[in-house]
Image 1 (cartoon, helix red, strand yellow):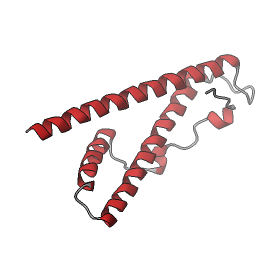
Image 2 (tube, helix red, strand yellow; image 1 turned 30 degrees about the vertical axis):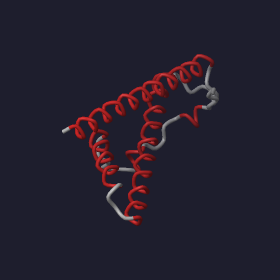
Image 3 (cartoon, one colour; image 1 turned 180 degrees about the vertical axis):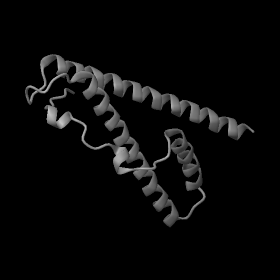
Image 4 (cartoon, one colour; image 1 turned 90 degrees about the vertical axis):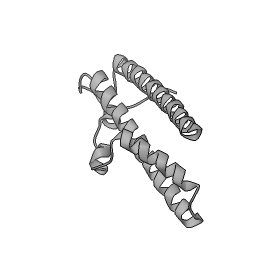
Length: 127
């Protein structure tokens, strides 16, 4: 899809960090998610429901963090002036390219993490 944004909608105002101070680092979060998923299988229905709600919350925070990072990066790289409300043609093109690259990179990192996680699980099962 295409992005049609005005400067006011694209300008970063709040960060996820301002909403979620003290969140664990991504590597810590990844490890806790793995242990979280492993413990889902050995719990009762009430605990499982609570754990799934927590997992959903963690995923939402990670999504917001990623979106925040995208907005901050592309805004600082692409928006050069504030003489009008609308983005200029080059700014709009830059933002579109920046967002596409960011999302492609994030997808690849997620895919690679999944591959490594699966390899770790296979190693643990083989021992």
